[in-house]
Length: 181
Image (tube, rainbow, N blue to C red):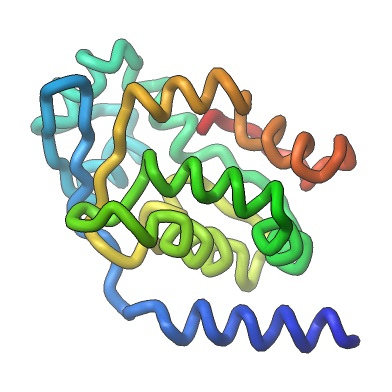
């Protein structure tokens, strides 16, 4: 009961403080090259498996196939909202969020990446206890940047989303699904 109340208050704070708008533009940093794409282009890739505009160049430079990225964007991960709140409030969870918040961050700020990711994750989980990477991008509160090289290194360090959640939960598992970081 006490935990549910804390989660409710915490979620109310996070969700209530988040602006109604989401990130419309995502800037991908690949070495010295910066290219921006719209959320609509990412949604189109997820739906059709076909990139458009600068997204074609981004995928080519990153050495990623459109099909693989579309799968990563749309793979569903089942994870309980209360467990997620506990996890991101824990010391290990905060450490991972801080690291990811440096890789995926508001475009014009070097801070608040962890908070933005946390809010986007919790909003994605609310209602159905599952998320996709695309849903997190859709819930992200402001235009953002992604350092592709650092993201790929983190993916090697943490494994896919399910492996990361399992590791943070001590091997107990957060739910099914899959997908890369």
